[in-house]
Length: 349
Image (spheres, rainbow, N blue to C red):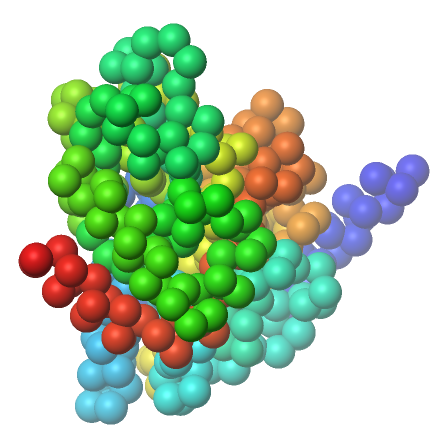
């Protein structure tokens, strides 16, 4: 009975959202490309187009906030709804690049996972950077921890590693025995960042650097590396669709981050984009993406609409979430520029 009432409430909310939508002829949505865009089209946007008649034009970007800033400052905004990473949303919101969102648009903020709702953004997806290995290349028992990832005597072979400080320093700290929940406390201590770089010094000769997830997966498939850090959905995609013998080591510890949906200030279809975001914030509609792509949602209730056998692939599933912690947006907003410069200089040494 409770489930029936819940369904009625959702149906009423959906009907109200669609009825009040001030649909534009076209809304330009900017996401992360590839299968990510494909999953959003098939799982979310096609449904909205069917309900409202609004055409959704998808474009791809690499998260460059400077591109948004240039559009807003020039007064020539061509993007309506975009998906930046959480730190970029915080910076862009402070600069007035994005439209502030109200609970009328997003729904009750208390219904969202920590870190998945902000003043100017609501989660488009919740992803994790995990340790994965090729079980064809590593016979017998595989790595169980980030310490194993750094141990080239125990597990010979090259390692794939993302060529940037953000997401990489965290893994180095976990390899040095720091629990995910304590990583940022340690990084903020005097000498904390030095400690992470000291760990990276140990593994550096055995690293194959990657800058795109496609490149990382190609390296794993070819045998150039035996294990890699990677975004969880890319590994799951190859396991499910390509029948690859890869393993994700969830209990090694991981961090989850959030990409957001933000409406660009001054976009030609600002009101229509907000109405579409309001519709998207209904749990059932959020789940449309996660059903097709192994990233979690923002709203807790959305998980109810993801099939149980697929839910186990999401970083936000109960069986995995206990091993994870959220990326500290404030830490990276404050330190990213300096740490990325230091990381590039260290790489070049």
